[in-house]
Length: 122
Image (cartoon, rainbow, N blue to C red; front, side, top):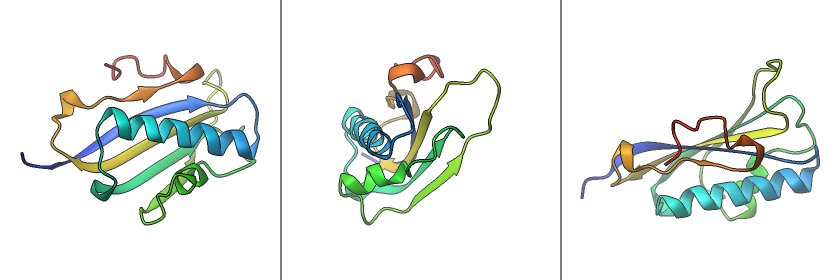
């Protein structure tokens, strides 16, 4: 089956701005995203991370390094500080080659981020 470039989205939250919690929550979310979509690590192109401005104790990308993704380009950024948005939220977008169609991709939202994009979750 032909492999196409796909994007997989996910988000989670942490209880407090703590480096260990940030790394652990990011690792858990990323592993779930890869598992649910049967992503072979060799098919990874790059991974984008963003965090709300109330997360500053650590880099979410450290969670990817913690699970051995040392040869994948990672990019981190800060979300806009929009009033009323989900607090202490980490978002991930994985770009990879996959045989899945866009409609077959499983986007993963956990903890307080569950309602962010309910239209994408299947």
